[in-house]
Length: 97
Image (cartoon, rainbow, N blue to C red; front, side, top):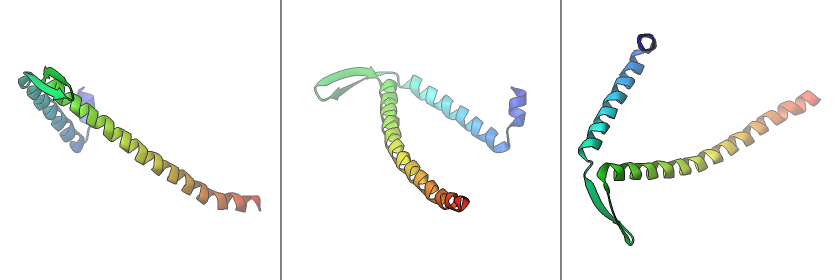
């Protein structure tokens, strides 16, 4: 572990420490907000711990963002492939001559 720490740059050490602190704060938040919360969804009524509800909402948001990002990157990758083929095609024609 000490070897790993010594190999990190100052910026990487700072990021690691911040990630650990944010993780500890998130854990404290989760423990303190574990009370049951009642909420309604269309015709259904649920009682669920507040932290679990927050995590479910974050998960849904992450999933939706991933779907939209996937579509955006799929279009970008298609455009990159087309541009690469345009760049390479004149080179291929010169080689044939």
